[in-house]
Image (cartoon, rainbow, N blue to C red; front, side, top):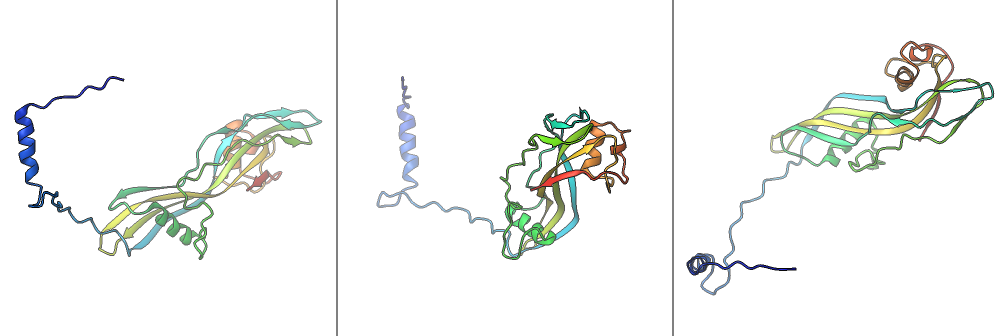
Length: 225
């Protein structure tokens, strides 16, 4: 490897030496330069939470698959639709510790215990669950759809620092992930608007399929972790 060195003109060297003398003490040691004081931390504050929302959201869905009378394995892979995340988005004010914000939200919703155990609720590096499921075996005939979901928690916050400054933003996390299987020709038992099963049915079975409408019917097969 070739290394090139640049040469300073004599005048530049002298100027640099002269400039350096202003930063030395009489003993030849560099003088300590004064640094601006660090801004005080935004601590000893109070959280105010609003618009706290908890709901199950669809994260992935497979194409519908029709099986004959003998049933069989569902082999269509679940395709990701939404990636769950753990995050704090600030609108304005000082940036405070995201983990502390999420811990406060978890205490507000009951997802963080009194001992501070968060089980991933406050971990902004928490990986999203894999929406893919193993080969589910169905015993009877029908047109089936496999889907995945999470229980998501979202809320807006205002944090008033001890100094009186305010930070505002939105915190997001999730607490449960699971999967389900529905049959397109049968309404999902107890399904209401916003249920991930309805969203999955509308996506893969079609908006006019019986499973795409709220109503009484066959229970959806769910597995949560």
